[in-house]
Length: 262
Image (tube, rainbow, N blue to C red):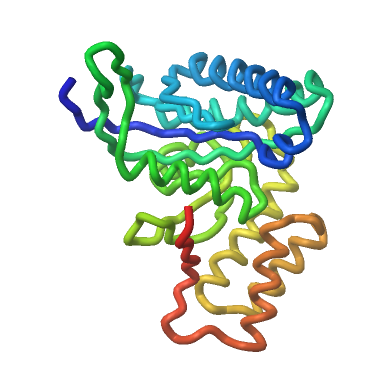
């Protein structure tokens, strides 16, 4: 099959702390865990019109927009990510141990094709969008969130979902930095208005940080942390602001975080 360019949204999802679980559990228990995880995630992806590309260890790679496009594939991918998040507590209860999830979602062009040989061919996609989604899934650990969205996915669904700015990052394999965000909930979900009000304070602090207005950033983050003292992102940026007040970054600083590893 000749490859064709497609506009898709790619989702990577894996189990948080899987390596530690592998050391704690018997092989049979790990197999049972993976089977239940894959069964649940695969079903969610298919229910939202996605295609399971492959399983890699404990990770699921899914595509929305190929081989079948629906016109709202970014939204379908985001709703699938939320459904996976919501399924984890039930899965944890069934397995009798707490589980977490890491999800990365990126939108963009890929090359879709059938790969393999005469006896076995599989439909898959390749390209920068796939690599970015994989990198974003990995960055959830760095930023203390369970879902990270790339810039294209974020902009395509911003009107339907509440999102929160995370960082401007340059990941391995990308020549230019990208804006990343985390997913809060669908706008129709009835999120606490007070939380959304305080989230505006965080977003203002995020922009002040970019503008090197560190004193104002500190004030805004401190105000946010009064209500959400355990918030990972706010504490992370406040810590950086305090460092920059003591040792300001050089003039070329642009708030980009560079990640050279996968």
